[in-house]
Amino acid sequence: MKKGNRFFMSTLYFLSITPMIADLPEKTMLSVDSGIEELVLQYEIAIDGLVAVKNTDNQINDTEMNPRFIRLFGDPVLYESSVSNALKGEATVELYEQNKSEDYLELSSESNLTYLQEIEDAIDKTMLVASVMHPEKFSYTEKNFKENIMTVESVQEQKLVGSIVPQITPQEILQDQAVGVDMKVKKPNFWITTGEASLQFTQNYISGNWSQGGESSNTLLSGFVYSANYNDQNKVQWDNKFEAKLGFTTTPSDEKHNYRISTDLLRVSSKLLLKAIRSWNYSFDVQSKTQTLRAYQNNSTNYTSAFLAPLETSVGIGMDYKKKHNNFDVSINIAPLSYRYVYVREKSLGGRYGIKGDHRSLQEFGSKTTIKHTWKITNNITWKSMLEAFTSYEKMIANWENTFDFAVSKYLSTTLFMHGRFDDGVKRKPGYNYFQFKEYLQFGLKYTW
Image 1: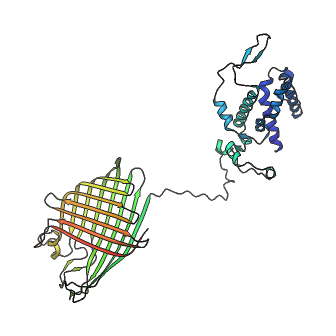
Image 2: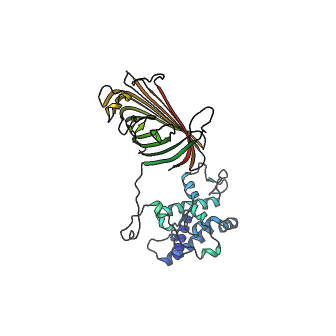
Image 3: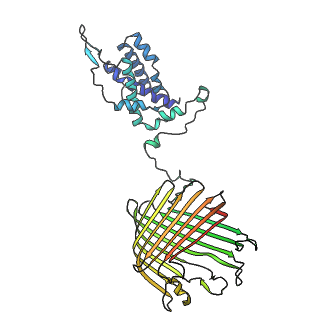
C-alpha cells in the first residue's frame, strides 16, 4: 500500500475507535495543531486505552482476529454493507442496562449487538463518512473490487486503472486534456430504406400436333421496388415507394409482332402521417401511375396503352390505421376527401379509361379506401396484398393486387401474382362483365436489401 494511503487508513482507524474511548482522560484526545509525531503517539495511547477499557482476553482476541479490519488497512473500497447498515437506522432495543449489584452500565441481555458488532458498526460508519469527504481516495467499489481480486504475486504489479471519482462528481474536461481526442457525435437517423430487384421467366412449349391445340411461348418479367420511410418515433411518419414492372411475352401466332407487353407499370406513392391516437394517424396520400411502352392488340397495329396514356393521379386526406403483430403488418387508409385525375396523351385512347368525347383528361371527387397487408406465413412464404377502391358515388374503380412469394434460397424464388380489377365507368366488352383479371406464375432471381 502506498505511504499516503497507509496514513489515510490509520486516520480512519483512529476515527473508528474514537466513539469507544470518548470516556478516556482528556489528554488522550488528538490536538488539532499537533504534528505527525503527536498523531502517532496519540494513536498508540488510543489503542492502549481501548485495551484498558475492554480488559477481557476474549474481546482482545476477537478484535485482533476480526477480518473486517482489512477494510481500514487495505486499499480504500466503498462496501455495499457500509451503505446499507447506515440506512437501517438506530437499533430499537436498549443496548445497555443498569447492573443490579454494581453501579455501572453493561450490555443488555436483550440486545443482539455484541462488542464485535459495535466495532464493525464503527468501521462501517467511518468508511462511509470517509468516502463522502474524500472520494478521491477510493479506487474501487465492492463490485469491481471482487472483479479484480489478485493473487499475492500479482499484487506487486497492480496498477490503478479506474477511479470512483467520475462516478460521484462529473469532472470538467480541460482544453489541454481534450487535445488528440477524436469525438464523434452521431445524429439519429429516422430514415429506413429497403429495395427489391427481380428477374423471372416462364417457358411453355407445345408441339404443333398437340391434340388440344395451343402455342409455345416464353415470358420474361423484371421488377424493381424501392422504399424510403421516415419515422421520428414521436409524431411524424412519411412513407415513400417507387415501383417498376416490365414483362414481355412471345406470341408465335401474332404475325405483326415478335412479342407483346404483358406487364408494364410505373408507380410512385407518398403518404404523410401525423400522430392522432394510439395506432391512428391523420394522413395525406398522393399516388401517381402510368406505363412506359405501347401495348398492342394481337395481329393489329392498334395499341391500347402508351406512356402517359393513361396517367392516373389520386390525392386523399383522411385517417390511417397501422398495426404490426408478429409476422403480420396491416395498414388501412380511409380518405373521405379524395380527388382523382386521369390524363391520356392521345385522345383516341380516352374512351378506354372513362374519358368522354374528345377530351384528354377526367377529374373526379369522391372517397377512397386502401388496405395493405404483409403476412409472412412461413420463413419461405410471404403474402403481400393491396386493395384500393375509389368511388365518385356514381361509379366505382377497384384494384386488388396479391403477390405470393415462395423463396427457394436467398437469390431464387417463385412468384404468383394475381390482379383483379373492377371498373363500371367504362364501356363493357361484349361477353364480359365489369370484372377483369390477370395472373402469372414465374420463377427466377430475386434479391432484397
